[in-house]
Length: 575
Image (cartoon, rainbow, N blue to C red; front, side, top):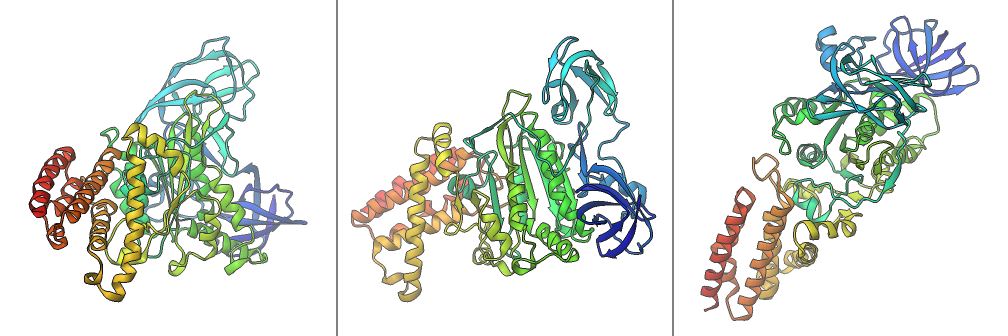
């Protein structure tokens, strides 16, 4: 037991303690939760995860001698937590709309019972990560595993039927007792059996991403953009429609109204994979901008630890962090309170290493127990002040992620969404994933994507010329190229996140929309060579009807009809 020596905002200095780094402590008369982040001689520095107003020197500080950990087990899915895994619904029932200081509740309901179905017999040898049984939850079967920090051994007893998460369901000969619930320190990556190459795409349902800048399962991506460019809507679309088994959505320092939209929409939104509600395979972590700043720093680690737990079951998890800039700002504030030497723009010198530690916890792996591979894919939004991509958080993120989805303010102002720049963005997984798309969708996938890239590049060059001399001064073939570029931008790259059909585009639909645009382009170039007038080619009706494919569920029928119409119209203009 120690006592408070000094209070500086969320940082409290205590004396008469012998803690270890990252020990969780109870601060003050109200027992506020804190974590040891620095030790200097007899003084230890504690970041407190709650408001420290009224806390004064001389009050007691008690060390739990345990690191900050999360509870893992059945009951996670469908839950809404704050950054410390405190369930917000339960806290609202306890203290009303505003969480009182010192209020706490378990992350998993200790009274809830689950029907445990064992997968082991007496005498079976089990090791860390092995599945010993399952329970039915809202989203399929939840695997009960030997915790990674156990030694494992021979099963001496097990118990099936209804149990709470804390009750022992399997006993081992070395005295270890396995329950459905386990704890894990949030700052420690969970061990895996083997790392795998990122060769399987995470299908997002967004044409610009799946086509131009695909993301692999187990991959990392950054979504930087200024205010109003659509970072949150992009991440919400990924959370709704990506083909991951589990979604972990972290609202880290975001505005309360944006998190409110997520909290209200997800319980009502139908899951395109199961037909059930999407909240049933989602864990939401809401740590908004008006919550204590220190808890914001912990929320990222809480989310990725939960994601790793589901990965260890052989599931694919997509983690959305919105936004890592607010996380970095929390680190900057705490670092300033510690009087550490500031780095660029006041951020701590260890900013780059912290970002790397976080993104490196992504990956596609063979878990310790289940045979199926599992993955954690991390998509982090970045909010650079003024849209300045040269600022430290964006630049340090670029060093560690493989995908860069740059949001363009100019596109957003033109109401072109998603406002992902096809000039500035890139994917480090494109070459590896092209074989998958060619095998699963169509052998022309990569050829068509490359043709689209070439057209967009040529379109960008021509736009600069048009600004100087006007479109009418261009040769006919280049005017036609500009028109094809416009079709790609309007009918392929643009996607309405609020349209019931266009908000999700399967890889098959994505391929056929582009194939039809390129088919029109080939017909147009041929007609031009046959002597057709470029104004007649541009004005044909079938060109504008390509947009019908975006909003139609029967897109193949629409494509067939449009190809027939194109044939007739091009024959007419060629005469």
